[in-house]
Image 1 (cartoon, rainbow, N blue to C red):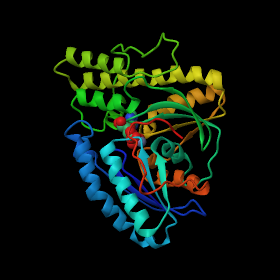
Image 2: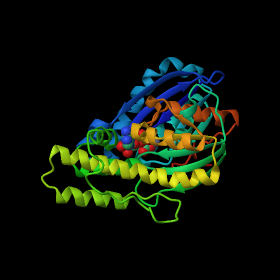
Image 3: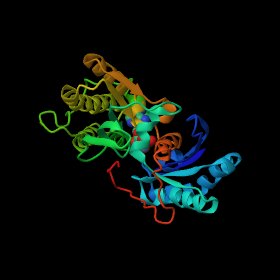
Image 4: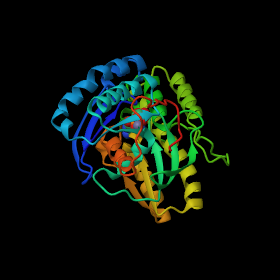
Length: 330
Ligand code: KG4
Ligand code: ZN
């Protein structure tokens, strides 16, 4: 079995995966969302201290499996440095104390493997990754052949939902809140700019859209319930139309047979509907992770680590690096 640890942002999670069968034997997660809600976003220092409390608790719950482990896996990049360190320190201690090989897992790659929990991996696949930290299209040929086709020039898709929620005083994380609000709003009442609409760039940008929302919010003070819902609806539509416009261009060039959406924001139903239509238009099959594994979790870290284990790709426990900002996937 492999024990896997996730602490790249505001979720502490531990999983145990059986190597021979890929079976997820144990998975437990403690989310810090409520602790950060008061601040409208993740406070790294607070997140780090909560991981220091919660990770040992999760390890204690995984105790029945500890004598059957063949390896320990941990997310070491990218993410918040002070939170990654908490998981890595626990993984180092376990690896050294029990003499187990250590597997360093890239968080973005783990999100890709959320598609294959308890399943065989199937590549090639074109993957849209939308989370709080990233907005990317990845051409995944294989476990270690991944090309970044497009990425964001500023904010990420999920982050823009968080910021819009914060501007309207709605709490954190903004994604599910804004999505719910948007479902009872009129997306046509306010005009929103679709980012990079006239640009030939194959890239994403969310800072301009965020500013457009800021101006609308200022203009319509005090914000009534309906205005909030209409702004949320117009924002969400523009945010998704932007993804669609750029992905349509990528579809035309790459003609993917298999397309997937992963990351916390892939839980958004409007995103799912929009891409189901795009895939139908291009004859591609749409793949999605089960809802419970869209947001950060340790099951996807363990699933990704199975691939490293099979390849004997281990990392030295004394010198494992934490790389908060790297996008380099292998
Ligand atoms: O993958 P994830 O759990 O953490 C990162 O790796 O960043 O993604 C969290 C992000 C947050 O920004 C959250 O607001 C966003 O995903 N998110 C959503 C939805 N659910 C979560 N964004 C839009 N619509 C949603 N339903
Ligand atoms: Zn993530």
